[in-house]
Amino acid sequence: MDDNRTELERLGEFGLIDRLADGVKIYHESTIKGIGDDAAVIDAGDKYMLLTTDTLVENVHFNLMYTPLKHLGYKSAIVNFSDIYAMNGDVRQIVVSIAMSNRFSLEAVEEIYDGIKKACDLYQVDLVGGDTTSSTSGLIITITAVGEVAKDEIVYRSGGKEKELLVVTGNLGAAFMGLQVLERERQIYLENPAIQPALEGVDYILERQLKPEARKDVIHYLKSLGVKPTSMIDVSDGLASEVLHLCKAGNLGCALYDEKIPVDQETFRVAREFNLDPTTCALNGGEDYELLFPSNKLITIK
Amino acid sequence: MDDNRTELERLGEFGLIDRLADGVKIYHESTIKGIGDDAAVIDAGDKYMLLTTDTLVENVHFNLMYTPLKHLGYKSAIVNFSDIYAMNGDVRQIVVSIAMSNRFSLEAVEEIYDGIKKACDLYQVDLVGGDTTSSTSGLIITITAVGEVAKDEIVYRSGGKEKELLVVTGNLGAAFMGLQVLERERQIYLENPAIQPALEGVDYILERQLKPEARKDVIHYLKSLGVKPTSMIDVSDGLASEVLHLCKAGNLGCALYDEKIPVDQETFRVAREFNLDPTTCALNGGEDYELLFPSNKLITIK
Image (cartoon, rainbow over all chains, first blue to last red; front, side, top):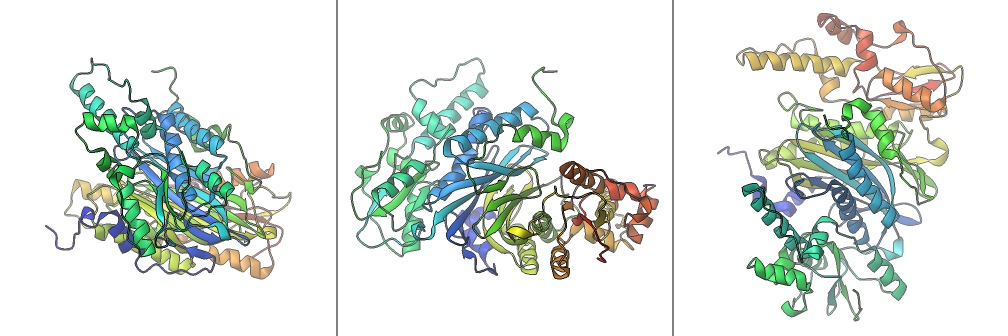
């Protein structure tokens, strides 16, 4: 083995980010927050601008065997919106970069864009630019989202206080279980293409995987209640990872109660079918795009 | 052939952009200019914010056989900076998305980032975030740049007037000829790895290909002269394509004089070696990252 070669998996995603952020200099006073939160924060006069980017790669983040292109476009927008909401901001604009091989037709690209436009229409976001290039293999979608937030409304990962309750919106683990079902059916199909996929009674978890939503509603609901969380993060890598980020950023500890972790009945049932622990799915599954934040009062959120 | 399938090459890049932009709705008054210029323009109170994104794909935009990773990182930043300067703005922040297979080590990713950081240091740009993911094959770098410009200083592709002189900075065709030399040497190497590459006397064109610069200096020089072009674009796809964009956007025509098109001596000589017409290289080569704008007075720019 080459002595000068360090395998990327040895560091993990967050170790890598720390290494790459090393030596980065900040030249502009307008850069309020660089690497290390859900979005970068830029001073734009009387408000803050938020900036975040996320990439979805074929056969890493999605498999086209069971991912409709329109859903894929929708999801690639949503994952970025979620990062802006996690800063308590609103999404304003996106730019879209798509790299794809010539096995994709114009109609295929239009399907992806239809999904992106659908997400933009529903969340009121302006698609303002992008770049479409060839790739020698595979499909890669990178979206960068711009958001804005009043300066006194911004919420970082840091800022949590002692004795707060940790609140998570919606339920967890569903997108992960949806993926397990899709992967199982893919394997069965590869072994015998004549067998029809068994997708009855799993509508909810499939939708959570293939067409997730971001919690714009929660941000606006909290504002209507006059509640501003002390800290916040979106649940993209699983509850365990996000709790750790909030605790680290706030220099706090935290106790999680198994029976309080919200898991949908369908997720629970299918997890049991797969001989998986539903709590483990909620902790480590990821792709939930729910919001996690501490609160000092009890709030009812669907 | 499938009747519902339209090959992407049938439309070309700009036909594709028009098709994808179709049906895009704008919800926010802050979106001043969406798809269709070098960068999107967003109202940020007392100034405009600029937003642009560009993707470089392995074996489409670069070949790692002759592209040092540090140069690649540098170039991937520069191509974005150039789009911001083309709006007469200054670059402030970037976010970086890299997708790469596990054949790349940590050291390789750090090399790419070193190049990006080098560009950021030289052009005074803040690297504020990004996303690093796996890919099943190949390396893809997407950078999104944020710029800013005073509202009365912004320059669009449209706005050109009759009887102006068209000015281009620097010289054209060099990056394209650099690429031809690198491709020739790659072919020779593939046929016989024992032969050393013949890269004497081509330093300038290789540097233009592998480590281009963006014309921040020109933007600041024009400001110091009190000159604000009526319209502007950067030369990324070749002079012919960019002249067409300016003319279309301004509803104008234009005459180009062969002997006035600036071609460096080295470019000229190597083009002749390859039996290529130097003017054709300047018109259609691309990757020059020079600025093209009309002027109503004579300006001396290196």
